[in-house]
Length: 266
Image (cartoon, rainbow, N blue to C red):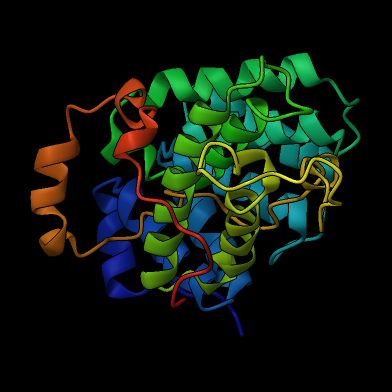
């Protein structure tokens, strides 16, 4: 079926409302109507949406609504990253970490991208929760096999934020985050954190999934906030008021983190 603009679409064009088209693209994407999502993302990008540039990168990377094209995917991510888009910067880090899209694997460059994105987001807990894939990546950086010095407390704190962020996305309808949430749950339950959680460690026990294998996981999804999804923050106002001034050093105090010994009711 041919793509046609609605009356609201035409009015949005006349007002150069890029956010409107990005949100419509996001709605189509969640419904797996990828071809319409791409058209709306293209309109939003022409009107100046750096978020839609990033979203088009994902569509090209995974062949959603358009033929898969790694070169165009990286190009769109770079265009969005140059405008400070956190999702695109994170994904470029993920590409260099895995050596994907025809890009040579480069852990140092990947680490730089992850920390560039982290610097933009800042230390606010409420903001970090909006980027669960970035939080997972930063946690892996601090675990064995990561580029940074091993830091169990920091890694665990980031994983808790990733868990909360993925749960938030799934509640908003992004069911494709369920696999990523399960991956984070597996990491939280990894023997690497046993001592931190007061669990007796068997140094000779085999792990169900090695950290090296987990580092090669591919997020075949759009990360945290790139849809323009609108959340019902009514239940979060009190939490945000309490958390907004928190920084990652605060959540790094393991005594302030609630242990989660297994998957919750997802």
